[in-house]
Amino acid sequence: MGKERDKLLWSLGQKPSDEDDPTLAERLLEEEVREGRVPEPMKRGLDKPKSPKKKKDAE
Image (cartoon, rainbow, N blue to C red; front, side):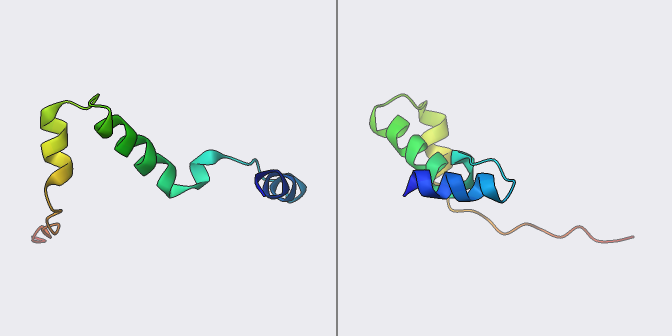
C-alpha cells in the first residue's frame, strides 16, 4: 500500500514522506528505550505526565 500512497501523493504534487506518520517518531523512540540507548534523565522526562501550560497574565 505504501507504493500506491506514494504514487497518489506524487500525482497530487506532494512529496511522500515517512514524517507524515506521527507514530514513526514514537516507534523509533520506543526502540531506543528498549535497547537502552536513551540516557536515564531522558527516560525520567518521558515518564513524567505532561503538566498543563500556565497562561501568563496580560498586563
